[in-house]
Length: 301
Image (tube, rainbow, N blue to C red):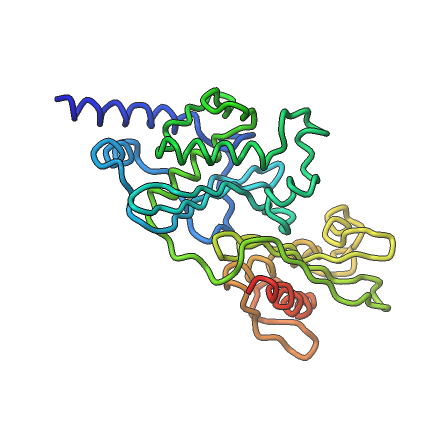
């Protein structure tokens, strides 16, 4: 009876936690489609039983994600290392599905996230993330991070940021089991081409790797005035449709990005002009973007 009571109690606690979990900013956000694997939080009864009965996990490296924030584009992921049945390392980070580039910890460490200077936080994001990681290693169970309706917790001293993503991604990682990580080094990688004298645009590429896999890509460009080509198109200033095209530039380049992610960085068959018939709905020149992406990923090997 005592053993059954422990199992039931763990399941109820985790079930309550999952009901309150979600993205730090919006619990109804859908998961981004460019995650390397689809992560889902474990059933409360399964996770509770495993923790209560054994208290151990299978050795290996675990990877899990939380849903992406629709407004900011940040999508949390967690990498866990299990040795001797225990979590010995936890790495909570995030990649940006909209901008690609550096991971959230790097952005915070470089002073560009501004949680203290801009948001009035008691510590920078990466510093608070480190405390959440240490707490999980100590407790050995994501359910120990009790989250309130705002996605925050009083369980970890010095942590005021939302932690529901951390809990969700950790649970998803443990539920999925040991993962085979990808071939690249985690981080953000960029490359840019030469300024085109005719068009006035220079192509730019930003790529993010998490769990060894390519998880985000941003194909864009910049002109002499410093305008971002994708945003320039979104704002209706590029005018491809006005010129008779069936779609705007940002809509077509988004299809090229999607192809790049789905094919793990592989380029489609290109003609001499850098165009392709392999991506439906894409009539623009995309060859340079795949070349630049390959160049950017050289730093990830």
